[in-house]
Image 1 (cartoon, each protein chain N blue to C red):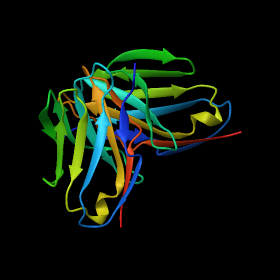
Image 2 (tube, rainbow over the protein chains, first blue to last red):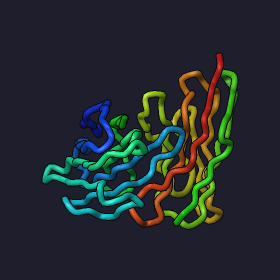
Image 3 (cartoon, rainbow over the protein chains, first blue to last red):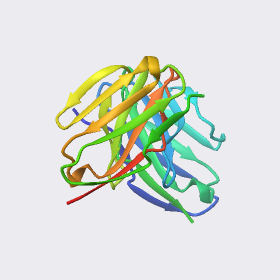
Length: 110
Length: 108
C-alpha cells in the first residue's frame, strides 16, 4: 500500500509568480485535503476535495485554488505569490475520518 | 469554530522519563487525532481517538469526549521521541483544526 506522496519537496519562487503543488493520495482514499503550515504554527486548513469537487474551504483567498483528478490525486495552485505564502504545504488523504499526511512541500517566496 | 489548546507548550525530559500531553477542545468532535511531527516536517499518525483509550507500545492516549479533552502518554521516553506533538479535531466539517503543539525535547 503506497502512502501519500507530494512533489516537489522544495520550491523557491519570487513574489508575483504562480506555483503548482501535487499530491497523490493513499491507495483507496477518495478525499484529499490541503493545509498550510507557517513556521512555528500548527497546520491551517486550505480546502478539501471529494470525488473531484471542492468540499469545504478555509479562510484563504481565491488565488489559492485546487483540482482533484479521477484517480483522486490533487493539485494546489497559488497565483500572485506573496512573501507570506512561504510555508510548508501538506496534503492529507482519507477514506472516512482519519487523515494521513504526505511529507509536504516547502515553498519559499523571495 | 472549535478552539484547540495544547499544554504544555514545551517539555524537556531526560531519556527514560514519562510525560503527559494534554489537548482541550471547545465543542463536540467526531474525529480527534494525535500526530508527531518529525524535524523534516512529516506528520506521523499516532492515534485516531475520538473517544476511549488506545495503546501502541510506549504510547497511549485517552479521550474523554464528554469533558472535551484528550491525553497522550509517553512512557520511558527516548531521544527519537523529540519533535512537536499535535492534537487535531474535526467537528463534523471534514477539516482538521490543529492545536499549537507541544515541543518535546528528550536528552540522553
